[in-house]
Amino acid sequence: MRTLLIFIDGFGWGGTDPGVNPQHAYGGDLLRMPGPAEARTGPVAMPRGGWARPIDAVLGVPGLPQSATGQTTLLAGVNAQGALGKHLTGFPNEALRKILLEHSILRRITQQGWSARFLNAYRPRFFDFPREKQLHFSATTVANLAADLPFFTLDDIVAHRSIYQEFTNAELRERGFDVAPLSPAAAGGILGRAAGVHDFVLFEYFQTDKAGHTGELARGCAELEKLVLLVKDSRPSLSQQSILRFAYALPLTRPFADIEMIGRILKSHGLTVSSQPNDKEFWGRVQRILQSCEDLKHRAVKGRNKKKRSETFFSDHDPCHKRLELLRELFFNKNKNVFSIMLAIKRKFYMVKKTGLKNQNFNKIQGS
Image 1 (cartoon, rainbow, N blue to C red):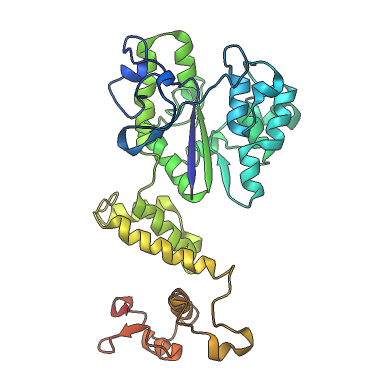
Image 2: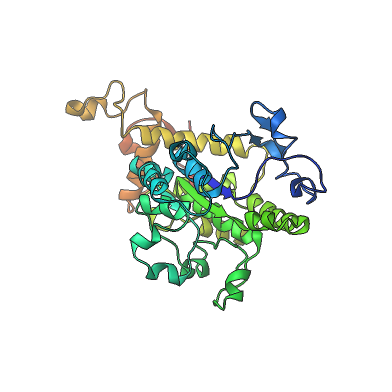
């Protein structure tokens, strides 16, 4: 399962007074928490099928929760304020850095063999600092260093591989950097494409925290309005995700598998995000077939014997392997036509129409 974590700094669960809380004043419902956290003891349904759950940010340590300890706790899964004995603001100190370097979620994910990325891009000056100095930056920076993952640059922003913490690029342009303006929806699309490629993607947004410190309700509402557009477009469509996984599974298309390319191809045919009623069922079946093929790498199939491969290669207990074998034969025998390959497989798992069958004409093949 692929996961996109959008960490929104300064975004909490407060009261419902629209004169105080931007969540209840900005005009939308996607980022609106339903009622005070004090009245909630478990997961609460959110608009559009979401769920929310209140968390005690104090974690047994008296005082006002602060950034350094709170973010370390979220990114490491360790009670950082409890370990420190107090709440700490700003950037992590040496004790918190030690926790992140050992327990960073990015480090733990990559150690398990999964793909992870911290998608925030950094300005050029950051790369002039040695690692020892970079470790004195934000909790997310330390978490990424702990996993030895690369940091994205402004070139990655230009190439739409990453986004800046202020994702419209207005702040970068004010600083004189040559980057084009980016809409919140476009920034969300970049997040979504990354989430379609990697198993875990983290993005940190702290303009909400800056807005909160000003106490200006209008500024808080403006940030939430941008965030809603980002979030809505950050989830790749079911069809795009599934086509991407299918493309990765086939040797012929793996080098060209890219969710942005898939999106362009769909649009060139007049198709956008597919929302047909049977999409979930269709692509769900594709996903299950791919998972079954993946499982073949890790488990033996009942009745199969390597020493008697010719007699046991095809098994009634393994229909997915027969499908995969067909695709394999078609790939490695490009000069043969489909019908001759089907005869070579020697099983009537597929119904083949002989009449009008041409080389690699997949439209004439129907699964039984």
